[in-house]
Length: 415
Ligand SMILES: Cc1cc2nc3c(=O)[nH]c(=O)nc-3n(C[C@H](O)[C@H](O)[C@H](O)COP(=O)(O)OP(=O)(O)OC[C@H]3O[C@@H](n4cnc5c(N)ncnc54)[C@H](O)[C@@H]3O)c2cc1C
Image (cartoon, rainbow, N blue to C red; front, side):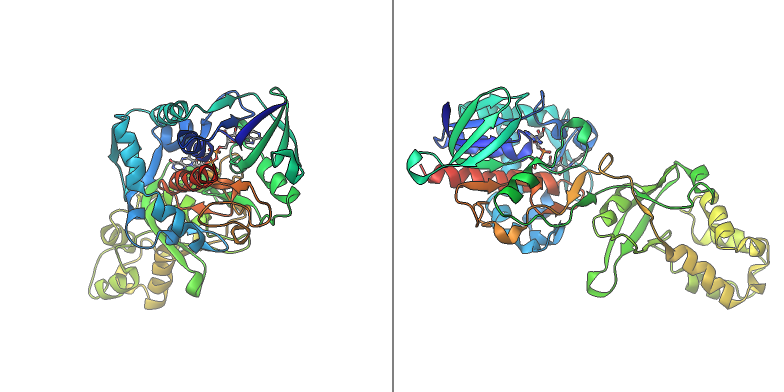
């Protein structure tokens, strides 16, 4: 039997950060992963360049970028370990990066640079690794046994530890090692796991192919997409992309975090133009055809999309009418079909395509300064396994770094 101060399950973004911090502050740390490769999600993230943080987090209320039963839970950890702090770490390792869009920071070269930084930081903390190693059982020990947990592993024997950190992430992309193990451990120790569903995921629609939308695959444009009503309403100004299966692109991934099964989403295909006003005002005395008028009023709208929208919304008969002759009622309906296209997704492309998992270990049962369980001393949850889901744009990694830092500090404070 072997012994370590802190055992971490999951060598992803959060687990490596926690291991490095605890190790560098003097704790003996064992980091276990069932995969052969560590940090696989970092490697595939941001199109291979890892959008590792977002500078927007460093001004104002960080909780607005997160979905959780209690979004305010994220504030202390994100205030303690900021986007600037992670940037500083990368600079120290001479990793170069750039800002791409809305505060999103990406590596100039490769996401592997981030993995290398975390590996080096773990090495500086003398962290022990075991890959290809699954955890079979976790037992709670008696107070007098000198350790709190006993862990059976598939290839590294039995380990005892004072602190157990669960950093096994969410369910998205099972092909690279995602499992629900963290949720099982949480339940074993009496924790609530909130409802789980794919997040940051493409949306699918029942009659997509029958209605001919798949023929428009590849059409992309900036839109405003919104979901929810009243105080719960959310909107994003981003690009969307029509695919063979439905809608995707940053706008759709963002809104998927807020969309609930059975609800509709609204897409404003020309957010810069109030089409109802423009169509009603412009028609007076005009000799133009309606379809020509529309291409002039909304020049960003691809012609193929406009034509298909016309057909779908049964406006095709009016396309060649003289604009001035089209009634205000028809113009109003036509404008609504483009400024507030309302459609009901039938579902999502699932965990295979989702970037994150919505829901997780309920945060009310976790200390927001240390990430320690309020139900079991010495047990910690960090990263995506918790009920904390960030927007697209580097927010999920910053949560992984910050929660990993909080737990790494907390376990080493106990030395
Ligand atoms: C395609 C894609 C692109 C993304 N791009 C970005 C981006 O650019 N920016 C951003 O902020 N976020 C991005 N994300 C989200 C981000 O990758 C995650 O939120 C983040 O990796 C979560 O960190 P984590 O440490 O909690 O979990 P992970 O990084 O997923 O790590 C969990 C680790 O636990 C291991 N594990 C799982 N089950 C077990 C088990 N039973 N036993 C032992 N080990 C286990 C896994 O092998 C893995 O190594 C992306 C996600 C995907 C899928």
